[in-house]
Amino acid sequence: MKSVLGDKKTILILLLPAMLLYTLVKLVPVLWSLGLSFFQGDLRGFTFVGLANFSKALEDAELHQAILFTLQYSLVVTAGQILLGYLFALFYVFVLRRSSAFVRALVFFPTVLPSVAVALLFQRFFEVAPQTGPVNSIFNAIGLPSIDWFGAPNTSFVVLVVVALWSSVGFFALLMYAGLVDIPEELLESARIDGANGLQLIRRIVLPLSLPVLLSATIFSFNVTLKVFDTIYALTGGGPGTSTQPLTLYMFKTTFTFQDYGYGATIALVLTLICLCVSLLIFGSARKDRTKA
Image (cartoon, rainbow, N blue to C red):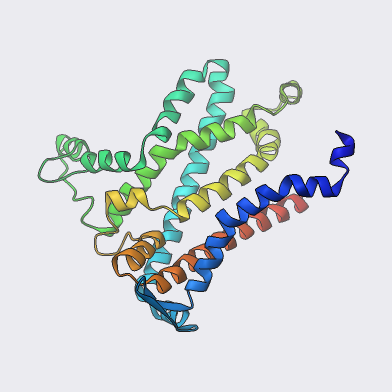
């Protein structure tokens, strides 16, 4: 085995099929999309327009609104997923301990449900007409008026955040639980003997040792929420107006509804650059923190 792994030509021959397949599946569509952003047209024909699509993007108010909404949605949902997921993970490890399996399965269950089905379920929960949903029924029961949750941008945003957190916190809790259980029990026991209380344990030992998994979870969450599509499409359709329209939905409408493939590819490039910048920013911040430590 050592002789095989030491031979670079053998390693190259073994990896070449996988590398070619990866290139075909991943890189070719990306490069194709990048090239398409310099053209304008539909399936009947394309015309080279140079940087016209990029100039249009700089002046497109709807695109700017979609970018702002996408960043706002990603920031709020990621913060909620990481915070709630971490609290649940701490609850599993330090309160429930070995009897946490049932609660973990219960909290994780919404993650396996189809996102469109979850969106339609919550549409019924927050419904105001023709039937009053459970949420408005509770409001009415305590003397408060019904709210048209999908009639205003702010309330629509609240519903979207609630749906995202309900359906994903279980996954992030499990991810961080896997990181927390790797912390040596002897280390925690030594700190307890030295007189450390619960908050000191979390601040001085648990939090620093779980930073790698927190970093991975944050990058994963940001990249997933920046590309959110199906839940918002099924729940609000980007409305009211275009107030809850993310970049992916705007790209979908531009490409498949208005048949403007070149500008759709430009929007996809903008989304790719945002994902790349956010990932680099998070990695850079983590590196600085470790240097300080």
